[in-house]
Length: 107
Image 1 (cartoon, rainbow, N blue to C red):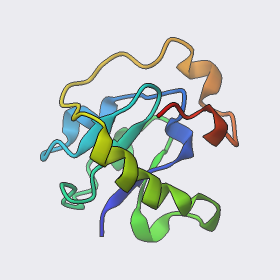
Image 2: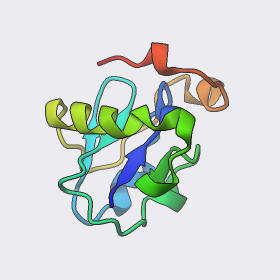
Image 3: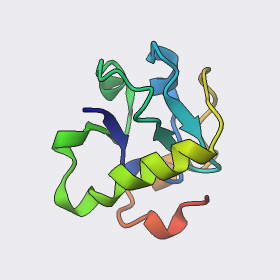
């Protein structure tokens, strides 16, 4: 199993998770992070670091977020690796509790 970044990350992109990842499996897009499932070792250290609870074990992804499993695979193949924490997006706090943000995802 791997871990999956879900919708809560969109337009927030807190990178606290990146600092604790022992294998550098995170990939960075304009307003979202993805996890490369081929790199993730399922250690789960990233989960408690995410301030918006966007990271879940694949088996715990809710039905309405299942499309994020494939989305992480697709985007991780295109986006560059991120290995160091960066500031969150400027308006992250305004977006952290917003639902249905998929249309806001920039590829």
